[in-house]
Image (cartoon, rainbow, N blue to C red):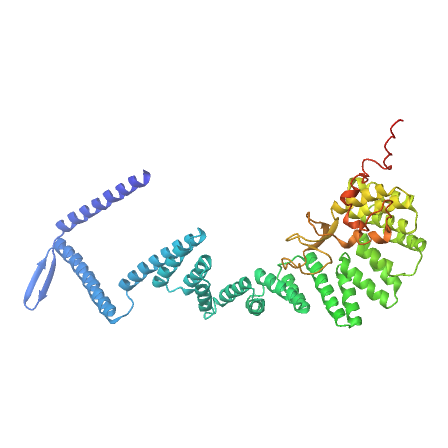
Amino acid sequence: MLWSLVKILVFVALVAAATLGASYLLDMEGGVLIAMGGIEINLTPIKAVIAAVVLILGVWLFLKLFGLLIALLRFINGDETALSRYFDRNREKKGFDALSEGMMALASGEGRKALSKAAKADRYLDRPELTTLLTAQAAEQVGDKAKADQAYRKLLDNEKTRFVGVRGIMKQKLAEGDTATAMALAEKAFALKPGHEEVQDTLLRLQAQNGDWKAARATLKAKLRHGTLPRDVHRRRDAVLALSEAKGVLDDTATIESREAAIEANKLSPDLIPAAVLAAEGYIAKDQKRNATRVLKKAWEAAPHPDLAAAFARIEPEETPEARLKRFQQLVKTAPDHRESRLLMAELYIAAEDFPEARRALGDLAAERPDARTLTIMAAIERGEGAADAIVKGWLARAVTAPRGPQWTCENCHHIHAHWAPICDNCGAFDTLAWKEGPATDYQSPVGTAMLPLIVGEIEDQRPASPRDPATGPTPEDAEIVEDPASETTPPEEPEKPKE
């Protein structure tokens, strides 16, 4: 409102000034005399001013018309002009509109519409890095691999889009299962952009699957250097790669190098169980029992595991059960209440034939956390204490159908492995195996059940029957004598004889 009032006041002031000036010009005496070729023109002051304004407008109009004529001649000659720029802007607008619609169609899952819009955008725009990429992604969405491959190969010709083309072809080769070509393309993409996280992960996975542990460690170091991997995760995965490299050297029978690599892996990550086991075996082979004991104790303190106990037993393979029991107490004292420590001590007491102590060491694991191993140990304790065969068979029957307990399980696909490996056999993921409870499966862990014949022995059947493996469970003929140990711990009473 105020601004409108100001404009009105300014307009009135200008009109008043023009009127005042015109009145001065009218009252002014004299004029302007123009003499040209014997012709004289006498102009009054007001007419002279009007003539000057008309002259100025005429010159300005002449210059504009002359410029338009020059521009028209240049346009006919092919030079860029405002007119050509106008048409170019119009084409560019149409091209970007088509590109925008194509990207929206691609995001909406309309691959064929995106292809059509990409072709239209390519006609109007001189931006092949955009239109070709849209064409490639749309072709992938509709399943036209040949067109997508052709589009990605076009991107290889431009230095700015070469990485996008290499990465696109690499992903195609991975989808086709051509890991050799994908590896070469991943190395090329990594050389173009070393800090690209997806390319780093792809190259690392392919190198690990190919067993090129040295190159994989270099890639892992690059991930740390570019900030795409936390330092603690890098330390753990570098230990896994060092361990895998050590196993490779061990396969080539170069024992010295394998020991050094295993010890390096153990130093990088002391809680990595296979590294600790391999390092301890290297020390045992060199008769450095104290070093082997130190490595295994440190690993047990971080994560108790049956493989560590087995390696600890190999330090003194000829010792008596009593001596072994005393030596193992030094191992488990760092985590005495851990489930693995209690199971281990129960097994050692069974080997020493101290069954009451074995029961005390096992505690309530068979009731609160029953699995195949705890139930098998309980069967051995019952047999060692002289319980009836029906009770022992009852524990074994429960062990057959009980959960397998902690196993090497892939955290990515939940596939269960009998032994640790750096790469999952099922999904190919790197460093995803963890010692934990796996999903319900028919797979039976070798831990625990493989010890069944060793710690239980052969149960003699009191009735005539065909011999069978106790791990396979009771047969239908045994159904009447199998008792549930959780509900009763005494043999069944004989039926009362009828009175005569």
